[in-house]
Image (tube, rainbow, N blue to C red):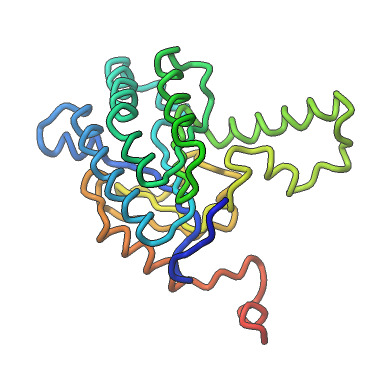
Length: 247
């Protein structure tokens, strides 16, 4: 990423988040599920602001999975409306704060008006370097790996690449977010302890943090706990502790 890591050494460069619990948050208050998703937008704002203050380079949020299309049609429609509204309400603030917005996922199923809003937000913030905010929309980790394989296969078929040249580095550049550092910290709210087909390739050596807090209640205090958890971890990447410490 363009900007240097200016935060504390214990702060992750790249944070990936599954924002789970909007529906349960609403159900516990006898509210429609879509109001839980709307409440979750406030948590997004708080986490974006917190990551910027800590010097995080990249924040990736799992907003809508490829499997979420199987949810009730009314809920899906309201979610799409919320994405469009969020674009209108938030992109100016993101731009003023130097945040670059991008979207990742399979966009073949999105309506043209949604695609237009996504492209507009990306274009308006494309020159910003303070932090990269990536929104995974209609995204699945297995889809990501398959599309990367297809991209590389097409290059081999076109004579641009030999099969022998396909290594982990080449594959890593072909998946989504290939131009960013892989996530250092993964956070999932809502009490579930799984990664749910999110960034399967990219999370190979990511530190995992799970909490019971439902997403609309997740704020800077909980984010600080996640960062504290990360700072206490010894990241060995297959080495021994002595090797990591230079012994």
